[in-house]
Image 1 (cartoon, rainbow, N blue to C red):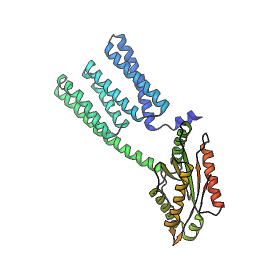
Image 2: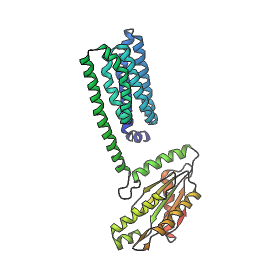
Image 3: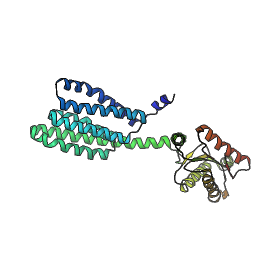
Image 4: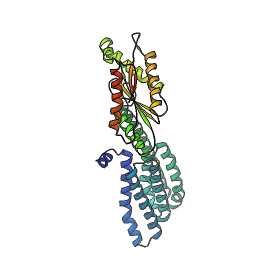
Length: 326
């Protein structure tokens, strides 16, 4: 079940790396065997190194899901292999520069792709210029430049759209705090660290007292503004290693990495006093009730959240406007 879930959750970047590395191995192996058969030892050796490197990248990404350093490694392997092949086999290998350059724009930042591809082109131009006629040289140079311009524009636009979509997918539209999806991802990542290392973390779950009365008496627009004001106050006074999420209608959850129960309680009390002193509705102060819970070794995420939820419920039952430790 875990493997299936992990497979579904692979990012587009992971999928591209897996496809490129696996595809390169499948594509290059027949050429490698053919060149060994033809006793073209040097180029066969280059192909073998490229194929083995790509196979390693495929296994590494599949097992770890790490993509940043591997992306650079894949591009460098492709470029170095391409350059060596070009100087051994001749100018006919120049046409492999197009896919190598395109890949750079999609695996790393487009601006870095421009620098890398410009550097790559410097290795080709001297040999091309002396090996082919001026018309063919100009044609290759112009088509390479046009390909780079189109790839840069498209990749830059894609990155911007991806950033916007990621923001919409992980951010609450009203309060600009993290949403439940973002919370699930963050807490799962943190939980994995807590299980495997001697670390501590805590949760803060807070709820606006009598929020329904605010909506009923003053309207939902005023209620929404209270939520915005509360989220702004939380963000303005957030501590290092904390993340804020809108957990429910008027509930917010703060994920506190490296916080003990004692430290978390102090922070929660600070939030409670700030809200009472700074947020008002028609000159009336509002209050919040809070539950806090430190992570217990080996407990599940579900049990951890359940404990902090019970602490909040207890704070409500004991008269509200208070913080209770789980």
